[in-house]
Length: 254
Length: 350
Image 1 (cartoon, each protein chain N blue to C red):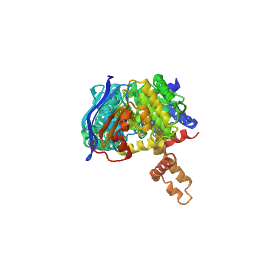
Image 2 (image 1 turned 90 degrees about the vertical axis):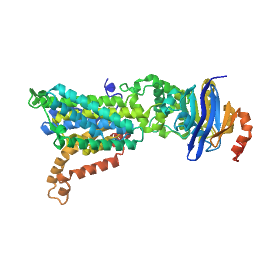
Image 3 (image 1 turned 30 degrees about the vertical axis):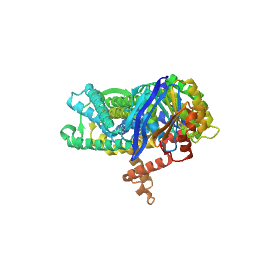
Image 4 (image 1 turned 180 degrees about the vertical axis):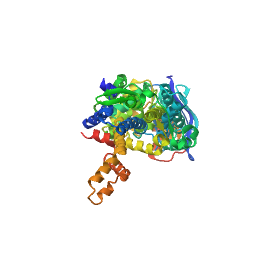
């Protein structure tokens, strides 16, 4: 068996009277791409927030490579390898495309507290950032302020920043949300490429079933915050749970 | 070399370059270009305020933190020099110890304030700094045995920095200790300004800008936002204290009005906004314009009132006592026409 990189044990959080994530226990292995599906409000993004630390868990644990990271802050988890791309584009709007990726590289190289050197002289950081931009084919727009990019390019940059982070766990939260039919495949190709090259683990929240069928090694289904199904894509998609969840019917006996 | 000195932060506007060079030349040769005690006093005040405003911009413009305690830190430096000069023997070591103690105290207090409030929301930090600054202002006026209260303190600085020390003549200008003192202020401010310019163009500075733009994402790519905000706040406080020390060395007097008052805090805020937030060069222009207006607007208006004495209404409007109204109008107009400050405006025109 390949190594378990990320594991959640009984992970739970409650919003008011509603269990947003309800005792989700799941392990994610190296080299595996897991799609997380479920209807709106099922707790997919909240599950991500608990893993990357934006929301503290009420119960349960998050283990990264066997280490308990549940008590750590967002930045510390990121440094240890929990990388996250956001569903709603979440960039540095007034800064240039290159600067956005450069900041990620700089964080990775722990150079943030260098006070008296010029940022422009750290060529290794800039060149590494440029290499990532080339990879996602955004290098032509390197000096554009992010606020002037099209939505599709902003989504691409969102993915580029996660690639630049080079984490142990890649978390993509609906990377193609709001993208046009022509643009979405570019981002999906990037993720597919990432999957081929990396021995890390990739988590992907996605709605489009055709995407999931081609990309995912495994699907987990969240429903009302709880884990409703887990397994091979073909089997899970064929299962009653998914059929009913995506038809909008009530699920019983989960 | 020159580009290195300004940390690669080019003015990026021809007009701005000319203006900055003009300010630099005027300040560098102020004793020779503008004779008179008052002119030199204005020039030294401009130097000190450029540093003070630039250090505030590190917080407000670059990191996006609003603080109302900046003049308190300015005061720490000033009172540090004053107290050291009174309680130690007159000499350079007193200036040195006072300056260092002031800067250190400022950094420590900024650290404690940051620890308590920067974790939470930015607005909370603003409130805390307001409370602490008010408390310190009250303390200084109450502890008059130590601080001189509202009267402030006068003290002696090394003889080499006073008018009594004479060196001879250059270009028909008598060189005395006062001019040496001016150059001490000028070169220290210039050096510290270049240090600040370097800091905002360093990797650290780029993280501060990222935090200003989107602190949530900055944290999510691995920067501990609290640590960076606290560090920026300490640095900015220490720089403000150094500016205060220089001001105290220049004035040979400290008092609540010259260093601690809330009015100065507002002036500094206005200078940053007029000059342009998030640009160190904005601090230069903001401070020059504001200090000049404070010192000479009344004279200018007096002259204007004299010239228009025969016309109706205008002499009344130009009455020197109304200078604050004109300063206010000037401010409103500048914010209206240059929302990104003078530097932002100059850089945006192609």
